[in-house]
Length: 402
Image 1 (cartoon, rainbow, N blue to C red):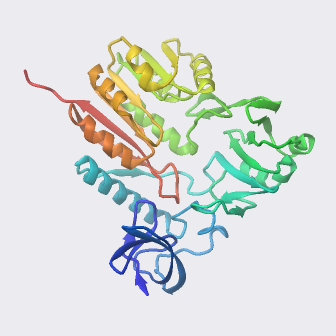
Image 2 (tube, helix red, strand yellow):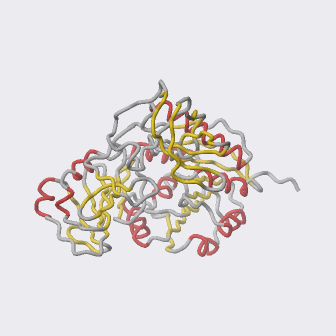
Image 3 (cartoon, rainbow, N blue to C red):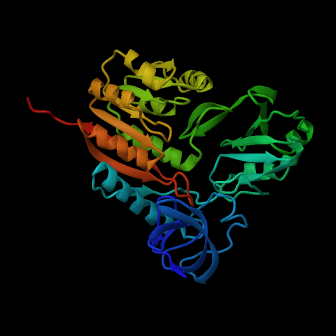
């Protein structure tokens, strides 16, 4: 029998087996369990519960039949309030340990605790649809997802009519409950389009990178602003928290600022910023996202944003203007060393760092503190009931005495 002492950064319980740290999914602090070791590494074990000897009084049961199997929703056995507390403590611990900064970090909650995701990706194996079990290629068939929006769950009930044998399918829904479907498959795919379009508001179905029917993009709306989003363009998965993110960014922009928006995607944060700023530059590597961004600037009546297609690290030095505020929203890998050094060389008065990975954020904050003070760090619960948490950090350039 083993006692679960606390949760790790991935939402797994931690106990010790023969003095070796052991990670156990689907457990809570204070629980006593019998374990089965499923992986032994030099410094740690991974295990699964064979039997619960004592369950936590805080455990919540039965919300989802796939919990603990499909690899998502690591925290669905906790109350929403407890998940926010966990994320606050997790963020503060990581930032303190790796960025050497002690902060009381506010966590901004999601308006929707469930049914918030406007995008999911399902695997398809032998005409069966579902998620992979965590760290495996074992398919867990599903007929709904508690995190997905209503329009997506409605479509899942008819997903067999896509007639995919093997591959994966990404389903996006927008504010108007319209759907954009992206199929990746090496097989012949012949969806029953008439049936699906009669039952769902399908804007388009894309097979690999070509339109099978309809459009390859749709329109999303946040804070009364409209954004064109292609099938392969990034957009935040939680509309309500995205709205709050936009407001946080807008609050930090000065009226006469020139903005540099790195990893700009479909242009959302730069468009939000230029509601006040005088000018912005955006850099993004995904071609369709840049095309979306150019259109989105026009839709939102911004004629003061200039976009560049390409890798940020290879193109950032091409910006020769004086930059007041830099917005970065990088992938989970964070900022590479070249980009960080070039950012520092701009001598911008402010950096707004949007991150989906606290570990790489902490690494980058440590490096940027060479010339920047960390003004605020706020967590946003973009991904309720998972261990993931979005952050917005505001850094102000230090005043260096001559």
